[in-house]
Amino acid sequence: MERQHHIQLLPGEVGETVFLPGDPGRAKFIADHFDDAELVAHNRQYITYTGTYQGIRVSVTSTGIGCPALAIAMEELIKVGAKNFIRIGTCGILQEHIPPASIIIATAAVRGDGTSREYFPLEYPAVADFDTLEALIGAADKRGIKPFVGIIRSHDAFYMESVLARGDYLARDKPWIESNVLAVENESSTLFTLATVRKCRGGTILAAGGHHLFPDKVIWADELKELLHQATLCALDAAVTLSKL
Image (cartoon, rainbow, N blue to C red):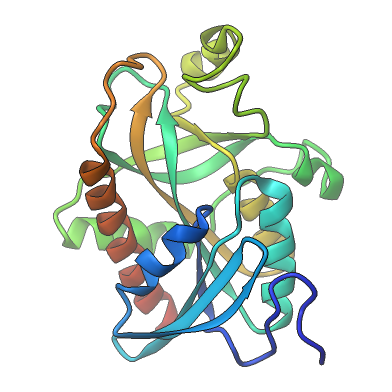
């Protein structure tokens, strides 16, 4: 088999569990948590490290922003042997009771993206894999982390639905706030649907830094880094649990 067109990987170059951050710079940050890691591919925004953690083989591939780029990465990663996908990312909080500097674990995602609609009708649900969800929640509990667990929303238009929006983003958020959607981000709705159909596992753990209802409550860069550190440790522990199933 030739190297995959976008991620430039061959079979055997990734572990069964692959972590999917959006930010290419975050790939090395996550890989630094492995017991050992090696850069195996770098093409466009797709940067992949593979290594080990507690005796299991794991990888991290950055996807860039949005569902189209994530879908490309997942389709190609599956072809080279990946079976479990855990997104480690950031999000904007929608609910008043969730403070900034929180960890959110998604049970499902509102499909506000366009990519998943190219694959599946909107009636098809975007639901996290149960084993992965349970493993992430269990990992957080063992580390003394109290995550908020529930439905999130994925969408494509950052400058229409964020605190940096040009329009009235809260008017767009209103139905999701009233529906108790915890947060918004840009990738999980495609991750969940695509993983389910391809008979893989998919989960998402998020560092919640910004708040749509309280845009002035911004956490410092060091606080976000610590949140991502906690999320990464939970994801790694979840990968160990999944390896035993």
